[in-house]
Length: 163
Image (cartoon, rainbow, N blue to C red; front, side):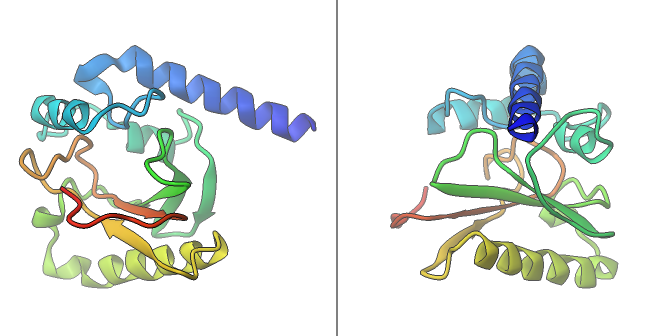
C-alpha cells in the first residue's frame, strides 16, 4: 500500500512538472491526453537543437520520476504519462540521439537492441495479440521530444492508417 502511494505521488509530481513546462518544454503529452492537433502543435514548437535537457534526459537522470518497466545499460522503458492505448510505453536509448534520421552506422546495434527490448516488454505487458511501434521524426513527423524514442501501443484494435 505504501509503495502504491509513493508511486502515485511520483506520477502526480511528474505530471505537474510536465504541465509547468508549458508548450515550450512539454516533451510528453499532457495528462489531458490532448488531441492530435495539440501534439502536432507541440511538434511544430519543439526545439530540435537540444540545448536544454529534454524531459527524457530528466527521467534518465532521475530528476523527474517515471513508471519504469525495464532498464539496462543501453536503454530505459517507462509508461507514457498520457497513454493513447490501454498499454502505451516508451523505449528510449540512454545515448542521446535526437532523431532517428540522425542515427549513425555506429548506432546499429543499439537500434536493434531497442526493438528487441520493445518486444520483450510488450510480451511482459500481455500484448501477445499484437501491438504497434511508432517513431516520430522531425517537425512533419510530429516529433515533440528531440530524444529518440519508440512508442509501443497495444491492448486494443489499432486503426489504419494511423495518421
